[in-house]
Image 1 (tube, one colour):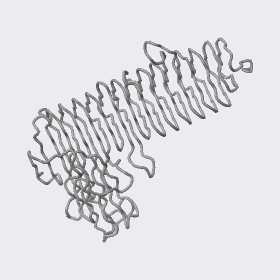
Image 2 (cartoon, rainbow, N blue to C red; image 1 turned 180 degrees about the vertical axis):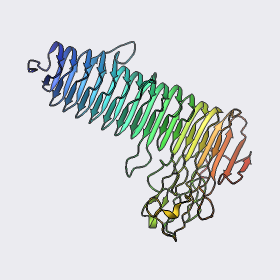
Image 3 (tube, rainbow, N blue to C red; image 1 turned 30 degrees about the vertical axis):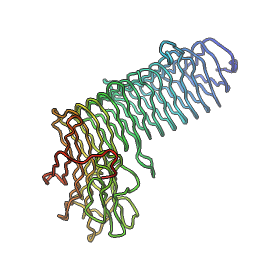
Image 4 (spheres, one colour; image 1 turned 45 degrees about the vertical axis):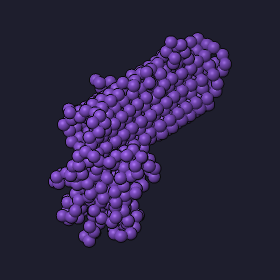
Length: 468
């Protein structure tokens, strides 16, 4: 197909590229009344197209060696099996709509469509939908502005959205639904009026080597609902929502996602073969000592350290911070250390009013597995003379006005030293305060087999106090 007739800076009618045909456009900006691609569209450098209607059909293949911008669009459809590759950024700007304040337009990415962006993926449209088994890879940042945002459908398996760096939405007056989908990014900053996470979806802030905790921030104007089997996963999670519901087997998960560096409670590896991490409670060996603030925990846990500090032993729990007027926990909020390792629990800090549900909130330390002597390779490279230790529990602090409908579990146990019959890791701290009555409790429990110590009332809590 001869596309040399199209000159940058000019306006044309419809550009239609049939199946099996190839259209190569020179670098520059073009204007078309509509764009239909069923064949191949290529550009060796920057390509900008001003066009209201765009369809990338089932057999479409788009390759742009520079930045690809669709400007002033009303509707863009990326159909089943279509593929788009951008060597730099991919930008979609909707048609102006003064009443909306954003682009008055829509983007639909359908089943098995594939988009690969080596730079930034920026969407400024009124409505964005990624439906069914879509596949999106972005090597830099994603920013989505506009109104409603939907990922997946209830009736089908969802797609995959992978982002090498940050995933950000600026949708403060919009609805965001993530259903049967997986979104992975280095960090998240999601802002919306309402967020629904359902259909066993996963939001995961994954960890890159040699860095600290990943960051996930979710802010809603009205509500965040996390449906059964869905998961929000990251090292440092902050959720601000007037209504937060964690339903069924849903999880807010910072388990084993604490700092990559050992931490202040890691102990002294020069005193023994390996240490165990501490946080809310001491570990049971090698000077792993408690640290941090029991009233306002704001740090992740600490991992143990191998011989002479050579390597980390397990991974500590991360940090989860929640601000919500009404909090329902039927599922799990977990910032424990890795199940098998020598890492302390992390921290969970909650401020709410009505707190109810029958779920589980935990920051437990790692235990020594009963079968440790049969393991000669990582994660437990001990010989028969080694005596592994149990890690300390983490910290939980919850401020509330009404917990009369709370019937769930709170656990900050230290780890258990199964094979040696030795002492468990130190008890973590659970601090509860009714902000109306000012009555408070401090609960210490080192393991499931130990009756907790509960201190009621008159616990000194000075907001300017240092670590406790």
